[in-house]
Image (tube, rainbow, N blue to C red):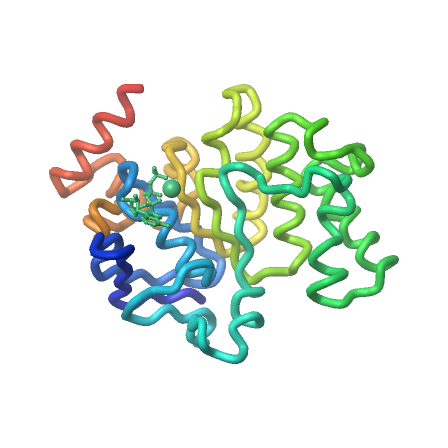
Length: 242
Ligand SMILES: Nc1ncnc2c1ncn2[C@@H]1O[C@H](COP(=O)(O)OP(=O)(O)OP(=O)(O)O)[C@@H](O)[C@H]1O
Ligand SMILES: [Mg+2]
């Protein structure tokens, strides 16, 4: 579903991605871990064409992710993104946030968009807040609305960039439960996370990224429990201490 082949990306003379290759099959959950600054967000942003990679190939269902391509919007709309800081429109209600994309990007009729949005809000446990404004919600509630908003575009895959790291600890569980349910339903997901429990239980594949390279990749059992690479071991020993 998603293929990266030797992807490079620099900002000025700082090389951020130094040849990343990764294959994500349909229905797979890939958790991406690694230290701050290793390039995790940059990698997700390149996959969703929010950033332009310098060289290598990024393919989504065989179609090139390329800024210059005339059908970049179609390719981009196959992949949803959920950010650390929700990014909901603060002056719109929950329901309006979710129907925005279907109405204005997909051109779906308002009544249908509302029906579909309510199904999704129900799924993430937020239907009762349809008329609330984003700032009136907890971080965990906002994040669940952000997930409903991503789903409303009917994506083939969703990229999550540290979706729970801005949340108070007691709110993390609800968001992870929604993500776990999506995984169970067969959604293809790439998740940047420090939630090692989630990675261990839900991921099909864990990738450890350091300094712009995938140092180690494999099953959660291999990478998280029995890492082969000293850098992975070192990173995990620091993360798990907290
Ligand atoms: N727009 C930008 N302009 C210049 N440099 C950038 C830009 N975005 C990221 N970088 C640099 O690229 C490197 C990788 O950043 P990135 O945000 O991808 O790391 P990360 O692994 O997501 O880190 P974190 O865990 O802190 O979120 C960092 O050195 C960062 O300073
Ligand atoms: Mg990041």
